[in-house]
Length: 113
Length: 117
Image 1 (cartoon, rainbow over the protein chains, first blue to last red):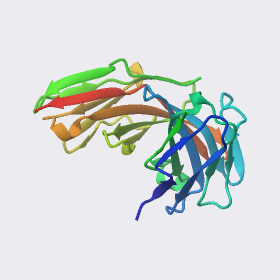
Image 2: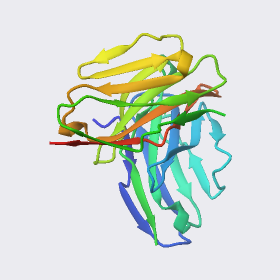
Image 3: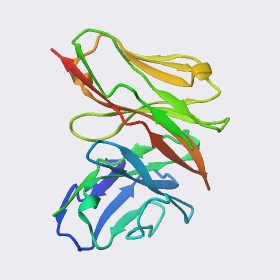
Image 4: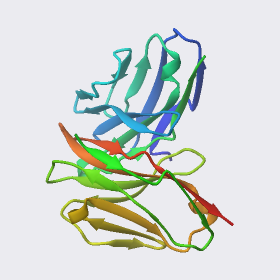
């Protein structure tokens, strides 16, 4: 059983479209995250979400919005996609009781044409 | 602001050699956590180790060992008798309390390790 799962694994779309990436964790964790890995492999936090409190990295454009229907899910919605949004997006989850170790999904490779 | 520096961009070693990956960090927090993650060519991020700022004991896990030195703000990772399967990008990361139980990771830029048979 995959602990943190993301769908889709690959996403190819045109500039200007709106798309979503889904993330689910079955670890019972209470905090979930989204990270972006650019073409140079640099990983940067986008959002973290805990107990309905959203913490946003100030550099993230407001075209990106996380949505959490419940504690096990944190989906990422992206509006008006731009070429620069092409990257690998990773979802992760953690729990204070397990020493805040973040477990990552396999990543979603987004290509904007 | 927190910062993690991995000065080695790429390292190549011959199989069975030992290799050390360097990590230097900056933080104003007195309590913090340090991590190493491995990203193999398949792309997933694999957790290797977590160390908190109050525990300076070195740790060994099989061929892997970690040296945490608070005095020099370093958390180096050594692979002994490297194998081809160790080829990957290795990330050092620092965790800060972002509030509400959230601990966001600040990553270094990664070190790409190539182990040549």
